[in-house]
Length: 168
Image (cartoon, rainbow, N blue to C red; front, top):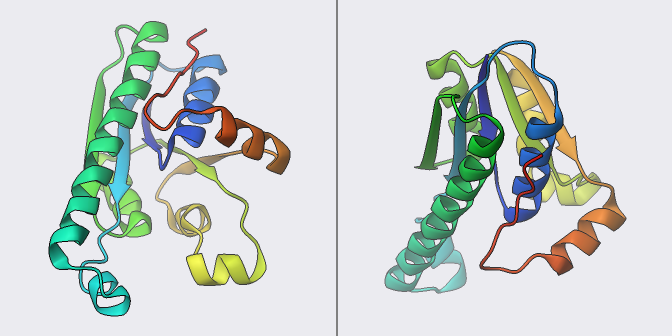
């Protein structure tokens, strides 16, 4: 089973890895772990007055953090699935489009991703990557969601420089 794991941040990285490790898969999994770094190069400096140099520094930092995140998840998954083929990827672009494109190109059987549970105006302004992927995916999608209180508590516990994924 080809499983594309789309991870945005440490909080959901933890939850996604825990879900995948704890689930009893009928077929041997093959993993592609991806973090999409959104590119707003032309909008951000124009709208905010941030210099192009500073913007590029932010993008590089997000790529570095994304790489650290996907490697940590890959390490945790390898503990439970030592023989599973695994690829860790950092890609640039629109998260909705890139996740859908990668799933289709790779012929994924399943996409596993998180949802922040935004509603109303917040969803309209920020968009919903999980809703777009769910609506347009070429395969099945599992959305891992944290209750609001747990998400808040977990976000406070997680250190910005470390991801602790429990492998069972």
